[in-house]
Image (cartoon, rainbow, N blue to C red; front, side):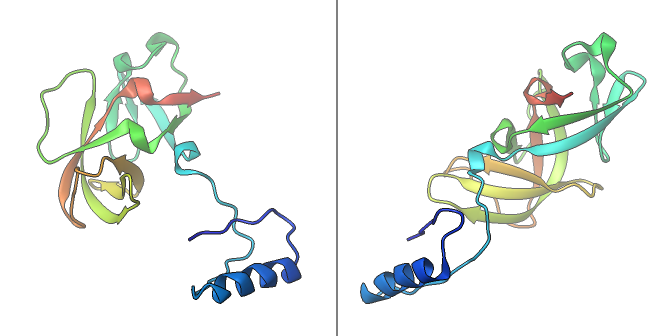
Length: 157
């Protein structure tokens, strides 16, 4: 059970809730001052730099032609990417509109309705958060391919 209280709840109010939880025979663990952002609203911010016909990120690049308004792409741009917009593969798929980036699973957690993975692209310092359906199970330290559709990258102006 998770109990979320309104910001500004007094210690007395928190103690009252803890007491009620423990009366039910449950254990309590209070975390104070943590603001929770629902997973669907969390996004990763990526910084890309224009290099010729590519947009370079941290140790991987995407052809500039795959982005909207490719002709007017600035020298540097920030992008927002939702974890649901990245797909994990064991083998590279046939190239299409998506880009394939090799990586490795660093961490995973099963959250009931989906898997939450942390993946490091090959030779990169980035850690990408990826959500996957319950049947898409990968092991920690497993090599994977990240399938990324550049149309899912939202440029932050």
